[in-house]
Image (tube, rainbow, N blue to C red):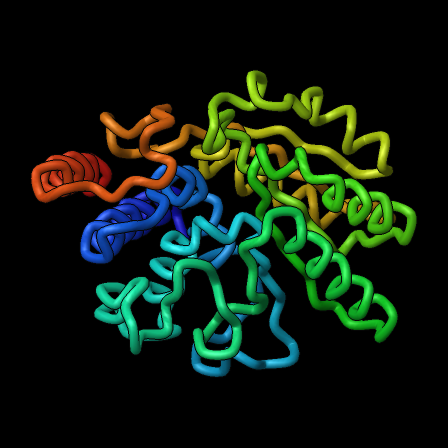
Length: 277
């Protein structure tokens, strides 16, 4: 896909995120919107997947370690064809299969149940190791929040991945600099992130997480990298795409009301028109 096509798809996915969280009355819009561009590129360009056969053994794997951003993953999966987009209106509803955090047993396209921060990356490392031991070409991708880096398990998993040369693993850090209690620096700073990952034998690439050219180049470099895992530090904006949500801590876990929904969708639709010209 061309960058303009990816941008339009990402815009549509952002609209779906806002609508589904509004309908549910709860959810996490800020961190969902910040990873939308990365997820769009992964599922529409980067990963080897088959929406018509979600359990295809040849597929690449994705683990959303920051599981509270599930609305973004669900919206991408729906638009990619894993299930009908109408299901997004059943987010967090009894009887639906789109829970507040990803759940692999009942949701098509979800490769790992996640939500307890710090644990998703360990699952991703285990998948990557398994593929290496079986001489498989499958690749594994995982997205972590920057606040999630405060969990010690993240670094144990990264150390293991580096020591075992898991170059089929790509760790993406959603570096939007906000977590539930404040800025990353104010809560418990993991900076400098780049140097830390390098010390654990990782190939590190820092990018603008909203620029599809940068995203494309990063994943191309990751495929060319041999011998160690790749870490993509994606500098992002929490609430990206909706002006009154951008870089605002209050939108970490707040659903928009009717008026806010209308304003958000109007903004996104106006942006979409610019990409269509």
